[in-house]
Amino acid sequence: MSSPTVPPGHREVAQLDLESVDLTDLGYFEDGPPHELFARMRTEAPVRWNPSADGVGFWSLTRAEDIIAVSRDPETFSSETGGVWARPDTIAPLEFTRNLLMFKDAPEHTKYRKIIQRAFLPRTVTRLEDEIRDIVRGRLATLAGKTESDLVAEIAVPVPLTVISRLLGSPDDDIDRLMQWTEQLGSGVTHNEDRTQVLGEMGQYFAELVARQRGGDRETLADALFNAEVDGKTLNEIEIALFFGILVFAGNDTTRSTFAGGMQALIENPDQLDLLRREPQRIPNAIEEILRWASPLNFFARTATRDTTIGGVDIAAGERIIMWYTAGNRDSAMIPNAEVFDITRDKPTHIAFGGGGPHFCLGAHLARRELTVLLEEVPPRLHDLAINGPVTHLRSHWANSLTSLPVSHRPVSG
Image (cartoon, rainbow, N blue to C red; front, side, top):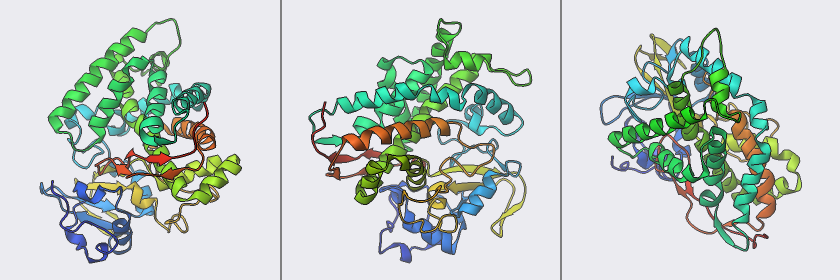
C-alpha cells in the first residue's frame, strides 16, 4: 500500500481529513505510532469509522475508557469471531488462528487460560531471575571496550529471545531461527502465503520440541503444561506447541519493544536516566511508565456480537473494533500530563497489557521481571549515553517496535 497522501507531521495533522484517514496504511507508522493524529482523534472522533482500501472498514477507539470497556465485555466484543488483528487473515487463515488462546472466547478460553496459568505462575518466572541476569550480563560482556552500540541488536533482541528459548527448552543454537520467524510474522509486510509457511515451520519445530521434552529427566514448562489440569481438561502436544509458538512471537516482542522504547525515552530525558541510576528503587514505577510510554503493541481487535454502542456511537453486530493501546496510553483523562515521560509518577496507569478482562497478557509477570533485571544491569554499565544515529522503527501498524537504537557511551568495562 502506498504512503498516505499527507503524511502526519507536526504541521500537517491539523489539516488532515479524519474521514479519509486509513490507519491500515503503514505510512502513518513510519516513525512509530502517530501520536499527534491519535490526540486529534481522541478529541474530535474517539470512536471513528476507519475506511480501508479493501472495503472492509472498522471502528477505531483512541480513548482509554472505551478500550477498557470493550476489553472487559467479551460477551459483546468477541476475539474468536473475527480474530484479534485488523483483518481476520492478517497472519494466517482464521480457521488456524482460532486454535490460539488469544483468539478464543469463553468457555474454551477460560479453561485453556486456567490450565496455562497453573504452569505459568509468578513463582515460575521468579525462578528464572538468576538466569535472566546471567543472560543480560553476558550480553553486556560482548560490549567490553566498545564506545558505540546498537541497543536493539545487542541487548533488546537477544536477551528476551534467549530467555524465552531457555524457558521453552529450545537450544541456544536455534535462537537465530526463532528471531527470523518472529521478524517475519511481526513486520506486517510479509505476504500471507509466506506467513502461513512460517507458521507451518514453527508448528513443526515446536511439536518436535514438545515431544522430545515429554517424560524427560528435568522439569520443563512442557511437563508443567502436560501435568496441569482444570475440570478434567488437559492440553495435548499440539495445543502446547501452539502455545509455545505464540509465546515466542508475543512474549519475546513485548520485552524487546518495551526495553528499546524505554531506553530511547530515558536517553532523550537524561534527568530521568540519572535519577534511575541514583535511585534504583524507582525501577518498578519506571517500568510501568515505560510500558505506558512505549506500549509494545499498537492494537488488538474485537468483533461486535450484537448491536451495541461505544461512547455514544452505534456499532452494528459483526462490525470490527480496533483498540489503539498506544493512543489510550497517552489519554490525559486516564493519567495526568500523559504527553510527558515521567518515572516519578505514583503507580502509573496504563493499558499496555490490554484493558483488563479475560485476555489480560499472560506474560506480564515475565515481561516485568525481564525489564527489572535489564534496568538494574544496563544503565549502570552504560554511561554518557547519547543517540548517535537514525532511530528506526519496524514498519508495522500492529507492533510498536524499534529496529535500531544506535548509541554512543563511555567504554564498557569487561
